[in-house]
Length: 123
Image (cartoon, rainbow, N blue to C red; front, side, top):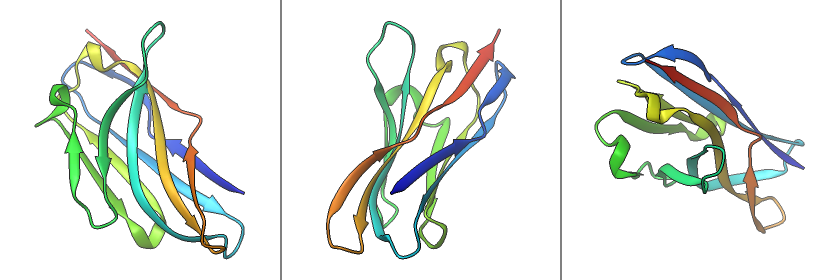
């Protein structure tokens, strides 16, 4: 019904930058609007962690470990959320997942997850 597709992950050295993108796609007319969107990350053996979230109006919030380095933003016209990651550290290495609260044209809110994109930061 609705699919979240992440892109922009990859391999980078410490201190480098990456920009993640996540596009919400659905059948014509299926997405009415999207409320909160967020980026999570997960490493093997650890719980999935909320990295950054953003409201429909653009109000962001971040986990303390990425404040000042990461910036979350969105383009509502494109149903897209971004995560600009600067000054990357090896401890940022994880699979990054996109999350969205989608309001369908039928008036229901549904939660969706992307399949994830790998970010690897080397020393």
